[in-house]
Length: 454
Image (cartoon, rainbow, N blue to C red; front, side):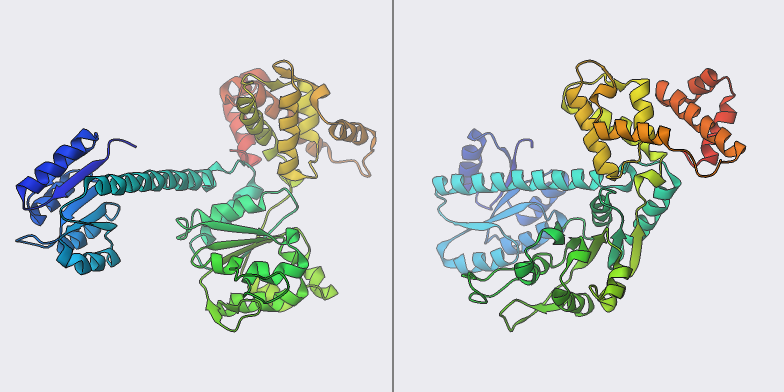
């Protein structure tokens, strides 16, 4: 953050001179105005962080100036300077957006303390704003690593539902990136400036489940020594993500259904009805339809959650994403470990791209990170791969297909392998890859388009 700019507004030249001289010695950038109208003109032209304004002035009052500043630059901090007899007016101004007030004659030590508090607040606001921008960028749809048509459909649906208030059910195996999709929805929604609150239902204590979600009153049960807000109350006006929704106990599902229908609930042991505005996103790796048949999940809750369903396919069903995810994570973990020139040997690469990754993206990240940490040279070999990956290769080589695939299918499979390998070696340069394969670049692009590869 640069130099803090302060505008002093006072019709008394002597008062302006004392304050501006003192604050300039503190290395602040100072502007002066003798009236509210002059102050507005300066604010229109300059980026002003703090305004110190007299409350009573001949043309317009400091209170009127406050309202104009709030309309022009809401982020500017306004402090009222007032005589003892108008403190009540200064307090009213604070209710309408002023940060604080100082009584005349101004105590310079008190001014110092107040300015330091405001500067610290500006730094925090600046950091929070930067963090929100980084989060929005991190969870934008364009940053989700994928080139498969299967994930293209997922992201298309995700983008279309982000602006709505509808409840969304995200389904997929463990490690497929359900929370990543939930965050992408939140940070591309009108609620993106508000926090994203995530709850792992599988990790909650069953006996305290209701209290965790809805809060409790003091004395509601043994150990409840004070009132506690639940996750729904904390998420008022925000987005609440309930991961592993299939683990919510049947006894809690009724209350959860009511919140979704009416946006109302009571704390445990309480009688006051709480009204909230919560956007609910839920995720599960369980078969909820089977749970309904088994009587462990309410059908009415399922349909209330299931306004829009997003099914994330496992990694083994979108194999064209495996090579780019390996390369992305190799670069990411390599930079973290200060090993920037790493690559996989051909044998290690072949094993990885054929592996099924039952743990999906989470497992892929762990395998690549492990390989990076264990690597002693720039070329990562099969020695750095976990045994389960190498055993999978041996098992797949021993297994005989139940039925022979057609010759065209086998040819296409071989073509894919050769083209992906050529693209890997040439770092994605299609012209060089086509030259290496002795085919035309147009022919290469035709095949990539046919396979849905961007």
